[in-house]
Length: 383
Image (cartoon, rainbow, N blue to C red; front, side, top):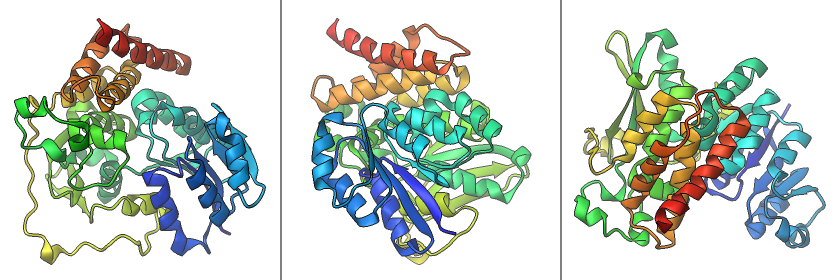
C-alpha cells in the first residue's frame, strides 16, 4: 500500500524539498494534504500537481484567491486553526512538520497524539514544548524522526550503539557568514549580509538564526528533549565545510559521524523512509574532492546565543517558549531595520532572564509565555 503524507509548510524550503524527494517515489507515496501560511500561488500549483484530498491556508483573507487558483475541488481549511483541522481530518501515515515558528505547534502535537510518524523540521515544537511532545509520543506510540540535518545525523549515528552507551553528542555549525568577523564588524552587519549564508539555502528567519548561531542554541534544546540527554552531553563545534552534520561519541571513545553533501533532501528522505534507505536526488558526496574537514570550538563571546541554548536546556519549563518567541520577535525587528544584528541575542537574553519562570507548564502556560515574550521584546526596545 502507498504511504500517505501530509506536508505542513509545503511552500517553504523544507516543504518544496520534500515534494522534490517524493517525485521519484510517487508509486509509493500519496500526498493527501498540503498546508501553507499565505503563499497562495505556490500552494495552488502544488495542489494542482499532487491532487491532495485537502489543503489548508492560515491566511483566511486569501481563501477566495486559493479557490480560484485550484483546478479541482479539494476540502479546504482556512484561518488560525487550518493546519490543526487538516491533521485532525485527513487520515495519513506521516506528517511532515515544516512550518517555521509557533504556528506549527498545535498541529504537530495533534499529529503525535494521533500516533503518526512525524518528520519534524519545526524545531519550535521541541524548543517550546519538548517535554510535552516527547511524553505524548511515548504515550501514543508516535515516531518522531528529525529533519534538521544535525539531529538527523545524531539520530543516524546513534544506530551504531545503545542509547545507554552514548557519552555525548556534538552538533556541527557552519559558523554562518560572520564566522571570522570582529565584534565591531558584527555590529554593522546589514540584513542583506545576514541573509547570505555560505552553504545552505534556507528561509530568511532560519538564515538569520544561523548567522547569530541562535539556530545552534535552539538545536541544543532540541537535542536535549529528542534524545533524552543531559545538557552536559551536548556540545557544539564549528565546521565550515558543512559535510559532517553531527557526531556521536560512545562510551568506548568511538566517534560516529554522519557525512553527506549539504542538501536538505538527504535528511528529509531519511525521515520519510526510515529505517529503509533508497536512492536520493541529492548530489552524492565525493570524498576525493574534499581538501579538508575542519572542526574547532565556537567563539562564545561573538556568538553569545549559544549560552542561552545551554541555559534553556538546563532549566526547561517555560524558558524554551520565551527563548523562541523573544528571538523570533528580535529577528523580525532586525529585518525591519529597527535593531542591530548584535541586538538580537542581547534582547533575547534580557527577556529570558526577567521572565516569570514556570518549571511545570501546561500547553496554555507555554503559549502565554510565548505571547508575553513577544510583547516584552517590543516593550524593551521602546524604553
